[in-house]
Image 1: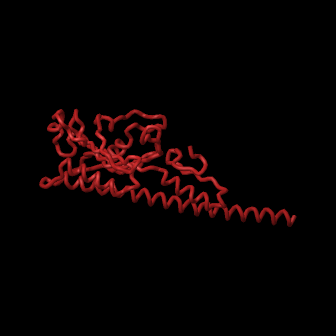
Image 2: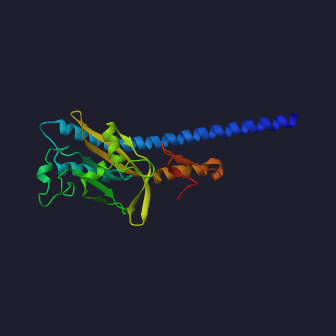
Image 3: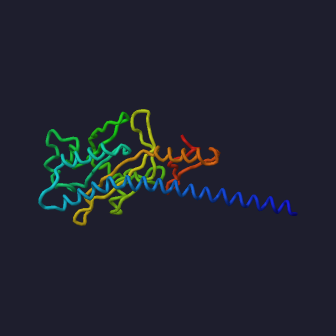
Length: 244
């Protein structure tokens, strides 16, 4: 009858309006997240480009201390990045690994046993930056596959294998004892003279995405909504409902 038809028509109209708004808001959120990631990618891209130029330049070049300071100062300026690193293949940077290996007092930016350049700066929970010494140069080649089907050293191996920038699946990382945060890694290969030399990467904490999601959730239908951000493999990168 006419009443039933009106109810069904009203229901369809409301569903279309709701789905239209959800599509629109999802598009905005996706755009904001993509913009944030692209902005974050510019940081390692800039450093990788600089290192490529100096490696290919047979004249003036950067030494290890200068590269270390470049990474440190870059991390210091970008407060939303939790760590930054520049790690290289054997003799991938300056062909001086043998001079540093087992040479007594080795700088924190160099692996004592192999002499390879492995710069790794982190931001501590109180906001300071700190240089960590990489003890094992082979960690970055670990092919072992974890529970989600991702290699342990995917953060390095992806850029090496593809010779292109890589965005990692989200993972839980223990920043300090008893304190962990969901993170992702952005890696950019250093390609010089047509050869993979190493990688420049950054880690970013995903709570920044969580804040975006919770802000949208509060605005969407007076908070009566649930929003979950999934990675390409279906892992949760942020959610207004699944917060643990």
